[in-house]
Image 1 (cartoon, rainbow, N blue to C red):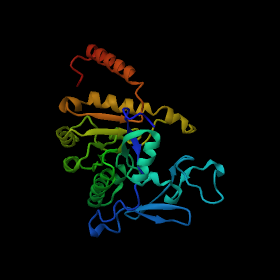
Image 2: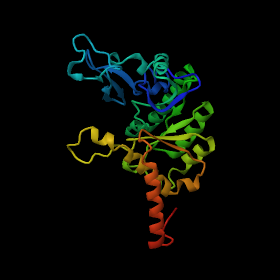
Image 3: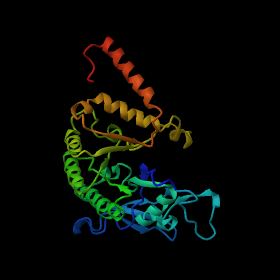
Image 4: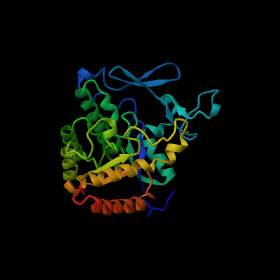
Length: 301
């Protein structure tokens, strides 16, 4: 444990949503289509949403994986394939706080798991009315149940409907009134088939974020992938290069003009490290200088 005068705050933690997140949080006509957990067999479970199945297969560790009889340590398989495989601190708020106390973490911000770190799961919807209710349902659960259970220990972060910036702006304002402090946003929308930050597509969202003062949290990989140079690359390669995602997001945002139109915006780039920042700032300054000479008037920033 840390001393009482040292409060460690984590802005890159993750939550495993308990199975009941969407129960009673969508309209009755969507009760059968909203996400729910089913048993695939005696050992495996899955989330089902709009008739699609998403098997549970979360990578864990010896501290987070519960082994069934006869399989402890077998093959070093730490992947949890059901809630029975997980320690309760993964999805139970009070058990989570106990583990935070052990680790010396005073407060944390939690990225979602089933909706993916930026809520991109709901871009796969066939019914975006349902998808919007699922986004709102998750946010109500996060704000009304998870965070209020231990209000001094969690930073409320909420999802947005990525497919509709006007609806996203309305959700930002709604959640800000309920106590949200941040939204999770994809680090680069273009790889997901969405308009880039270089367009005015996202202006309604950014206007609402600037108005409410929420922080835009961007986790690595929320653009769809990490940098993987070769088909044969092991997991060690993209993990080692994950800072490139944050570098790309930072450079794209800075040169896109977003911060000129909305100077009050604040962004947090999660799990990409920070050692690259001095290099990137130097490189961007050099790029501006070179392009100003070679293409006068050709820079948007």
